[in-house]
Length: 377
Ligand code: B12
Ligand code: SF4
Ligand code: SF4
Image 1 (cartoon, rainbow, N blue to C red):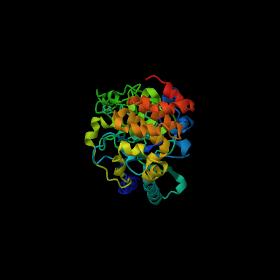
Image 2: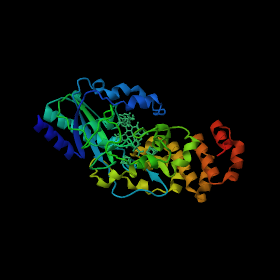
Image 3: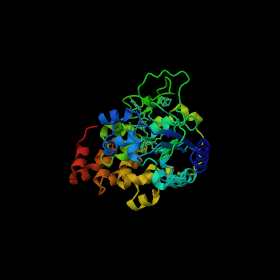
Image 4: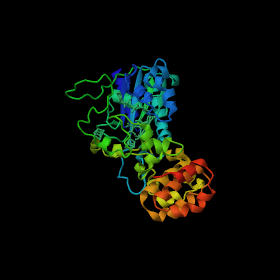
């Protein structure tokens, strides 16, 4: 059994998975999820509530599942990002949901060949299914859960994307990470902060105070949620904190000292799109729907759609202090899409261009935009 499991591990690693570890599928005793949902920290991600039971119980996802194969894909950066527009690092690639999938298909074939199972005997996911990926990765020893809620690898730091294969195959479970002199004072299996010690860098650095407790993210306050998942108006109180983050946020990942062990990824299952990181704020504000579709084709950024990205770019422009962006923002304050107008009006006012909006204000009818004009900052 061990020999077959090691052959499977070798074949999956050769496909481009940077970490391959196994866990046995008993139900998780992870109480983080129910508490998180009960407190409403999921914002409007109702799909998290609908699938909560399944997330804790793999048998409800694949009846008869015996093991879960946790896979890590290292996207460790070759060079630092930063500047006047900041993107989540994972977004500067083709959409990993698409590029990791062929690896999972091939991994399934390896499982079939080595264990003689059929396609119906396993199910794979990369961020796409009702699987608490970080908890399973912690149980399989891929890493530990940090106070920033991330699954942190001792080999790759915070730069590891996760994928999972549930299978009706018995694999020898790998041990979770344990501290040398661990005092198990928590009834929770993956309680956050195992190897954080006294460090609180991530909690202190979060620009929007999104951590009510170590290891717990309030999605309503998280820049990643607001700039990616929220399809509507971004709460005014959070806009200044969004700073230069135009899509996603890596602040609580970047500051983590465990990244000192990170190595640049092999990227066998990823395709780098560096040209996106090179776009200037002025270029983003000039985007048309056609150019948006062409530039962001194949990337995860297409998920926020044209209006969502323009909304985010207006906030970044408002925070930039760069008054040379005012003419572009005034044009956007007259855009057909109200969502863009709301945020453009905010940005113009934040840059002190109030007077430039007078004629537009007179003709405005949409309630959300009028509210923006009326708001006191
Ligand atoms: C919903 C979601 C989000 C939401 C909510 C984030 C969150 N912290 O839950 C939003 C949109 C904000 C988000 C943001 C990001 N996400 Co996200 N997200 C997910 C998703 C789909 C579900 C996560 C989930 O179940 N959340 C619910 C909470 C309760 O669970 P959790 O944090 O995962 O689980 C921990 C707690 O339960 C805790 N815990 C256990 N027991 C106990 C007990 C107590 C008392 C407490 C307090 C806690 C606790 O430990 C658990 C194990 O890690 C997963 C994919 C998946 N299917 O798992 C990706 C995933 C977590 N996201 C990922 C990434 C990369 C990000 C971003 C970095 C993207 C970006 N750059 O903008 C940020 C990071 C924000 C952060 N610090 O967490 C990766 C993380 C990889 C990794 N190495 O950890 C995942 C795994 C996707 C993937 N397949 O790679 N995400
Ligand atoms: S991703 Fe950004 S906003 Fe969200 S918790 Fe981390 S630092 Fe805070
Ligand atoms: S920054 Fe510090 S506290 Fe936060 S996850 Fe990393 S080691 Fe833990």
